[in-house]
Length: 223
Image 1 (tube, rainbow, N blue to C red):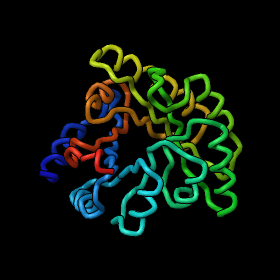
Image 2: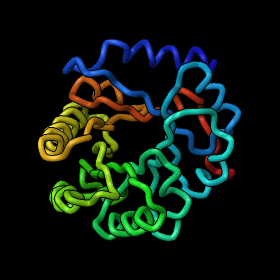
Image 3: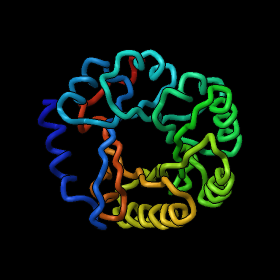
Image 4: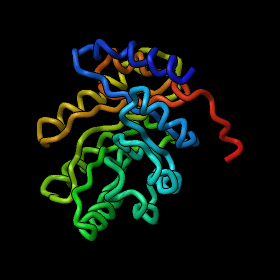
C-alpha cells in the first residue's frame, strides 16, 4: 500500500506545476514510525517533515539518508533539537523566533536554512505570519550570514471553496516571487497538503506536504 500510495502521488506531480517547475514531495511524518519512514525513503521519498521537535529529536539518529525539514509549531525552548540538525526549519513565524534561531546557529557555528510560514487565510486556528508580518520578517533576514531563507510555507484555509484556495495560493506565489527577487537561495513555495495539493500545484506551488495520502491515517488520539 505504501509503495502504491507513493507512486500514485509521484506520478501525479511528475509533469510539474502550472509553471512547468519541478514539484518536490515532502512526506509529513508526524506519528509515523521510523521503519515506515525509511521504507518510504527506500521507495523514492527524498524529503520528510516532522511536526514535533521532540519527535524529531527521538527519530533523528535513525532516519535513512534524506532531506529533513521541521514543519510544526516552533517553541524557543525546543530549538536546541532542531538548529544544526534539521536541513530546514520551515515554520518561522516571527522576528523573535528568527532571532532565537540566529543565536543558536551562531553558537553552533552553522548556517541554518529556514522558511517563513504564512497563514494565507488569516485563520485564528492556524499558525503563521500575516503577509505584512512576513514582509518584515524576510527583510530582517537580509544580512544574516547564519541564516539562509530557502522558501515560503503557506497554510491554506480549511474550506471546500476551490476558488478561495486557488486565490490564496496565487497570493502566496506572488509573495514568493517578491522574496525570490531580493534573496538568493529562495526556491520552495510549500503549499498544499493531502486535501488540497492538486489545487495548489495548479496555482504555483512547487512543494507539497503529504501525510495521510502516503502513510495512511494515523491515530492522533493515542499520542
